[in-house]
Image (cartoon, rainbow, N blue to C red):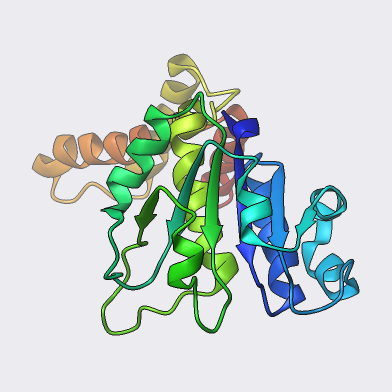
Length: 234
């Protein structure tokens, strides 16, 4: 599915933003970036500079003279718009937009983004099948081009690679209960010697609380040795 999705930048004004978009695309494993009639000459050193490690994306980026030429390579086109358009085109909520892409995963999908200052024109949108809007605060709805694109990339990545969101780092070298008990016995003996358990009738409750404190921490063997050394020194 990753290889079937392309991102199309229509009349981008700042080459730096093209570089940022290439970087965003590569962050989430996508590979295709199409640029339609960029304002500045292409290839562009500013775009290369901001792409950082995504220069390979820019080298494969295709430049088209018109949106008609660019969109003919796709089966379905989604247009990103910051405002509601009074045109006869289906407007999708952002959730429905993601669901629609998932539904059409076997199609060649293109996602249109307009120029930074004005966004897509109604003529640009006429080449799309659907319009969607990224939900943002109504107090400030303007999104940078690369920010809009990276939000879309992230949401698509969640449905394409769901396993990435379930991964957890497994702790290694966790101290055994036997070693923990040796440590805790040492701690208890040291505290008894220092007269810590006052009044005596609260000793049991205090030990339970102490055991719970250290029990919540998945201590490694190294950490247990460090704690033992610290308490011993004190």
